[in-house]
Structures are given as structure tokens and as C-alpha cells.
Image (tube, rainbow, N blue to C red):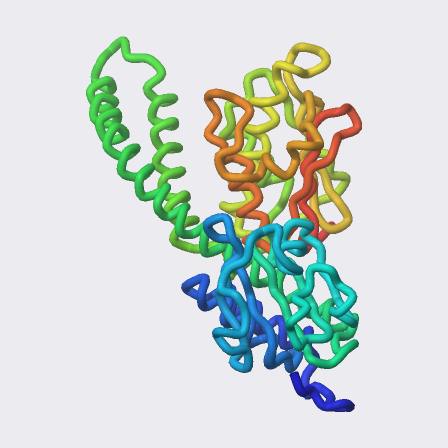
Length: 373
């Protein structure tokens, strides 16, 4: 890398990153995301020796490299316990090396003297190197960390859209057939003088149809919220609560004043539905008073929270509960909290788990554009 001493960048790297983030989020393939990341590093930071490896098939595989890095310059695959890339992937930590000769994991035969190694979420590693010692600054590392965050989000979006589209296609087909049959029998019931609960059945079928349509819209619309609007969190919570089987659970809306957020209303309600359902299904049998879980929705300085007074979530399981397919119940789908995280990320929000004051589960949504009053 031959960045000349004293050369300044013509534009603020953070400003350029905003443009890069949009390009990455609109990429159609993982290859485009990885190549776009490398090109951004070349443009923003003037790195001409960098690459991205992704965890695939039990190894770290090179998926994009800078134009100055020859194809035979590095191994195409590495084990997870091999080299600086493996160390970065295993620890999930970023590294800046002023002198690679003192780093045990570095290749002693390589000509590079300094380097950066930054995780791409939990999906892989971005690396840059230079033949000059002390080449990379702390600012370089900070910008790369921001860049790779966008990369990880873009890769996650692509995986989510692919899996969700497959899922919704199956669900819409497999549900619509029996749904149409049920509607046919419902019409016959309307003429029976002793038929009861027809209205309740009709509302349930309408809700199923709405869920199918919304799920398809979510899948086809991608994981980016392009046109958010002001949405009342208390009103969204009330709408979500009405659609969840709550047994004898109760909802408290702990808002001292009206609170609105910039969001997609349908997706926000879906997020709250899944959080409410998680509290009711996992906390109702363990509530201290034995009568049902109490769920509370309230404001945060930069977001809002949903908490309950149930059994809580084991700290060791908190990262796993957001993974697709994870469930602690035989009848669970393992999709509820996974969808919560996806919807949060689509808005640019952060979702985290902690413990409520009563020992139950507390989900905090932060980095939210909140408007009070």
C-alpha cells in the first residue's frame, strides 16, 4: 500500500460511509456486498491490500480482494484456528498491528509489516495489510469497524430475505388451501339457526389472512424500512396486545406522555406481538403470583422496552434466543424472537436482553428515533 505521507482525503469518511451503506443494503448478492466493501476500503481509506473472508463450510473462505492483491498472494481458505483471521473470527474482536513481526499468528514469510483485522459480525473477517510498519491509525480502525458493521447487516439482510421468501411461499400455499376450505364451511354455518360463534370464527380467519399477506409483504419488501412514519408506541402496543392469546396475562403501558417513533407501523406491531407472545408463553406459568404474567411497555431515552415478571431468560442463552429455530418449548417454532431482531435491524434499531426489576425478561429497543410529547 503506497498511501503518500500528508495526503488528505477529499471527503469525510463517515459521510462517504452513509452512501456506501445504502449501496451495500441494495446489493443483490453476497458477492456484491463483499466486493463493495473492499472497493469502499480502497476508496475511503486508500487501502490497496485488503480482503474479506467469510465462514462457509467450516472454513474461512476468501470472497473478495483488492485489485492490488494477487489471487495467488493468499490462501483461498483458512481454518477457524489458523492465523490472525482465525483469531479475529473466534474472538469477535478487532485488532490493529503496528508490527506484525511480533504477532505469533502472522505469517513469518509475508512481506507485510502492519495490519488490521476486523470481524464482519459473526460471518467473517475483513483484513488490510501494508509493507510499512505503523501504517494504520486508530481512525482507520474505527472507520473499518463502521464499514464492516454495514457489511454484516447487508449479508444478514440477504440471508433473511432468501429464507423468509422461501418460508412465506410455503406458508402462504399450505395455509391458504385449508383457509379457503374453512371459509367455505363458515358460509354454510351462517345459515344454521343454532350456529354460534360465527363472528369469532370469521375474525380469526380474517386475522389469518392478514398475517399471510403481511408476512409476504415483509418478505418481498426486504429488510430495509424505506418510508418510516411517526407511530405511537402505546397505540401500537394496544393493537398488538389485542391480537395475541394472552390468557390471564395483563399489559401495562408505562408512558407518562405520548411517545412516537419513526417506524413501519405494521412491522412495529409484529415486533410487539412477538415480544408479547414470548412473555405470555414463556412466563405465564412461572409468574410469582401464579395468576399470569404482567407485561409492561415503557419508554427509554432512545427507544422503548418490553418486560415481564416471569422467569426471565438465562444470561447464557440470551444471544441464542434470537437465532432462527431456537426454542425451549417442544411446540415452539423458534421464529418469534428471530423475527423481532430482523424487524429491529430493518429499522436500524438495536435489540438487547436484560433482567427486569422483578426478575423477568426485559427487551430493550435502542437507537430509535423517538419523539416525545
